[in-house]
Amino acid sequence: MYTRKNQKDLTADERARFVHAVLEVKRTGTYDEFVRLHGRYFVSDGEGGQRVGHMSPSFFPWHRQYLLEFERALQQVDPRVTLPYWDWTAEQSPVAAPWSDDFLGGNGRPGDRRVMTGPFAFDRGDWPITVGVTEERHLMRDFGRPADPVALPTPAALAHALDDPVYDSAPWDSTATTEGFRNKIEGWTVGEKEGWHHHNRVHLWVGGQMTGGTSPNDPVFWLHHTFIDLLWARWQRRHPGSGYEPSRPVPAPDPQHGRVVSLDEPLSPWQVRPAELLDHTRFYQYAE
Image 1 (cartoon, one colour):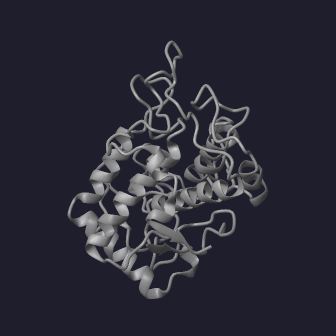
Image 2: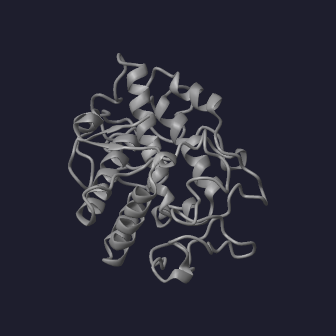
């Protein structure tokens, strides 16, 4: 078992090792396969077929396995690398960590929002965007979306979500707004105009490629989702009597029958069950 750390606590050597491993996985083409995978499984309420990655109860376990797969790819380059997390309730300055020149680089420039600093700037030659919904080949960011401002989530708002003892509730999609930790964290409980909540709001705040289904094009995606994974672990500790829902397959003729994954049904594309991903300490621990 290894340890995932808060990015602000990484040493200079740990930051350099992480960046090097990410760039190497990009160079081999593996990174873009992860981007394509995330885009393929960004399935919304209104689309047909199974919905495992987003707007569904399996949001947390699906991304846990996704992070594990990416972390293993990094560790093929450097066994000492682990995924760091970004606590966006504490580190909210657009000029502080993780946006340093030796780590993720900073905001995009005015106009085209092109990132000009750090190892993932297009001008460095190591980070062309080849998978996405636009033809832009450079990484873009728009911190805080000045044209229509959005703020990062507050500690108080996060505490409200963590206090919910219910994991998820019917109708098991983006409209599950009455109760349920999953959607309070995923963030569909209010619309984009209101800035969404938590997970979604952070994507909006960063801007650029982080606002679409191919959001892993921005390496901050991994730090963001590692924190989301930690929040799930914190919720589990706070509510030991609560578990993943739905615990049994959704029956017909429920509209969500065959669309959402219950506790012991396999998650595509890995065929691992949510039940196998409930305990993160099987794989890693967090330095909190």
